[in-house]
Figure 1 (cartoon, rainbow, N blue to C red):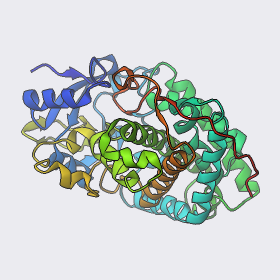
Figure 2: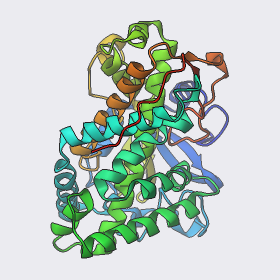
Figure 3: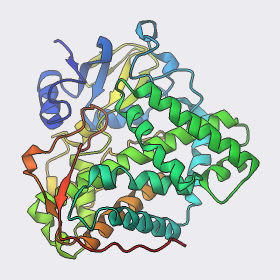
Length: 405
């Protein structure tokens, strides 16, 4: 049975249909081709993905194990997300990974929740002030894509101006297209400059806490981890905001929240994590020996792509859809196992997203789509799922103005 191209027709517009077709043809573990025709396995079975992410001895995060490196050119567009020789937490394994993960979690856990919410509200209001007077806006480019990076930049240690300048480079890197390597370099240079500055002048921010507790980890390892924190924190959070707003604008179940209420915001956000996870697929794990998974023979060194959204929609676990979306957090949107998104990072993303949604509903209560829903398009990426634009109309209102304390 021939493998399907992971980046191909339908992979970004209707991925649910693609996963169903894969499941019918191949089962819970499907052969796929990455950019350049590089083979891999896409794990779309819920139980199989739980097994892969829960067994680091058999399915390692160590990319040096990959059996395809001889076929990978230096300019391969997926190098920012599938790489080797990088001293980041993504590729660290065993006890060293556990110590490193604890360092990052502790640094993130030091963020004051009240300050985080206040910063999120301030930047949300500031962004809304730029368009509220004209009665129209694109909630992706003018709001969702800007809010997370501005909040994260502040809590990590960048100035507001430096944080805003990082949006393009991170988007280019995560989308893994022609601009991926250039985006990765700009983000690395920015992180390197901030780490050097905070090493000389510590402050009350995430980077300073990472440096203070780094132990045996080098400054370059801190730089690499900061890159992961920034890119993995920004784009998925931006897509979480944008997709949740789209759901609330187009689904009658959440209409009450569009008229001054907030009760449906958490439900809409949770449904997005189940049905339209911002991170659709994630590389990867590497088989440490020959094995079988989902009825497939997996050779030592084979790359397995984590099909997070495919697993979320596995019919074997979706016998009662309402119970899954109604506050059930057993989804794979934040991955699973020791390499999952750290819990403090999940909480930060949720505060930024929920605050951003609530503020815009409070400020613009009669907001509505400016175009037919069927005309909206998704980003062309098999990795991250989000809208390219979300044009809306509303009654023009005056800007709030005012300075942040």
